[in-house]
Image 1 (tube, rainbow, N blue to C red):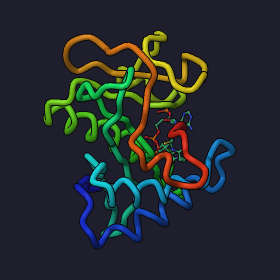
Image 2 (image 1 turned 60 degrees about the horizontal axis):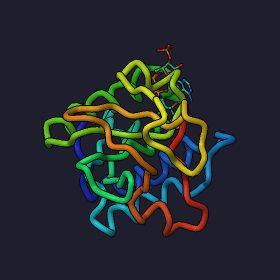
Image 3 (image 1 turned 180 degrees about the vertical axis):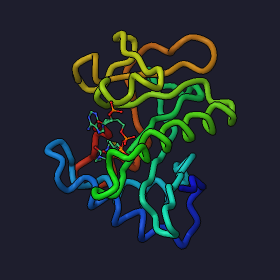
Image 4 (image 1 turned 90 degrees about the vertical axis):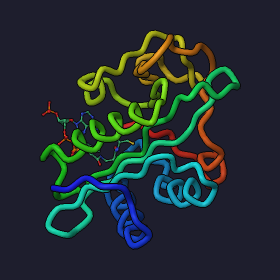
Length: 173
Ligand SMILES: CC(C)(COP(=O)(O)OP(=O)(O)OC[C@H]1O[C@@H](n2cnc3c(N)ncnc32)[C@H](O)[C@@H]1OP(=O)(O)O)[C@@H](O)C(=O)NCCC(=O)NCCS
């Protein structure tokens, strides 16, 4: 498996993988794939990595800038992350998250936040303690990872692509 940054040739494959991965998910908004297109269009796709297996795109992860408490703090949101359904459970998602976080850190990000299940994300060091909030979601689903300094406090706001699509997605597993 190769993990690499997306190229323009990957855009359609990324779109279809996200559609396929989220199709069976009860929590999916149905807008996850379109969010990636909108992030890209608005220059907010800070990191977009694909996992390539046998020359085919098998997974994708995105990171985009977020505000916390109404301000940018060099923090970024993880998500959506998606793995082709028939290849889930083989470690591709974990590899994408790990490589994405390492890249984010290397780009001097101060931290990363996500909405998701602790069962998957705690292995990467994510924690939730209520300092960052999102739209009344239970505290345990709003998780963060500090790279430098202290975690900012306040309400989380995603890049505008998450609002542009018809039913905004909350990137949770
Ligand atoms: C979530 C997802 C990206 C994980 O990718 P993956 O390649 O299947 O993950 P891995 O093989 O690295 O699995 C790692 C672990 O995460 C667990 N896991 C996977 N999906 C999970 C979920 N939705 N909730 C809780 N745990 C999950 C696996 O059981 C595995 O646990 P283990 O190591 O203790 O056995 C993939 O399942 C997916 O595309 N799901 C649909 C889309 C989605 O929900 N994306 C996340 C929201 S943005």
